Image (cartoon, rainbow, N blue to C red; front, top):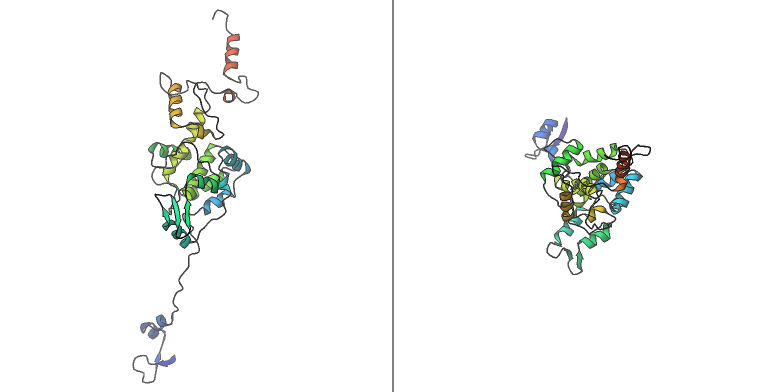
Amino acid sequence: MEDVPNQHDGDGPVQTNVMDGINAGGLQSRRHPRKKQVQEGRNKASPARLVKLNKTLDQMQRDLIENEYFMGGILKIEATTMPADLSRWVLQRYNLESECIEVPGRGEIPITADSVQQTLGLRNSGEEVFYGWDAEAISFINNKYGFESGSAPEITTFCKMIEDMNGRADDDFMRAWLIVVVSTFICPSTSLHVSPRCYPIVADLDKVLYVDSLVVDIQVPDCPVRAEAWDSKRIVKVAKSDKKPEGGYGKLRLKQRFTNNKAGGLFVGYEQTQKFVSSKLPPTF
């Protein structure tokens, strides 16, 4: 027991205990006010997961990103957070019509394809990409990676998938990595899930690879990044030429470097196969 002053009438000490203190609000009155937490930076809608993922990539994967797709600037990102008040301040001063960050009394900072290229080293040429809902692209990605239709996978699911590839550098890796890039850096949101709106961007990798491997009779630009050389009009024109009368595709021949089998194989290409067959047939056949 402890003698404390009577908080009701002030007529000398009274005995109290813990329960009396609780009932009288004594414990509440002794609580220290909570300090207001100051948010140093934002983790959601930040490239933190991307930066962490990039540090785990194998050299062959990094070479594919940098030399084949010219996106090496994404690999060089170091900042994972930005002060929340700075983020709000910048966004509030962005003018959608002028595409500039308008700094009062200072000037304007353009946010254009050229400025993004200068900052990140990304290409700003070629056909515009589609960022939106596409049922065919969603179905393609779900089937490719074994996802069930319904809710979109979490970003960490793709990160874990890439780590489990053990350094494999192919289209499946590049497609998964691009989904993480778009969902965490280029078009981020506060969601922990990837956005299926980015699926059409990566679903076209197979289409471009296929048409670029065909022998065609149209002029195709000699661009280092082959996706830049193939716009929608060229793809549609080649697809029409490659379509078989009975349905399906595969009418056009593949380029010579794609017709070779592994070293040591009997048939090493279409022309070689024709010569072999012709040499075994009667002259009158």
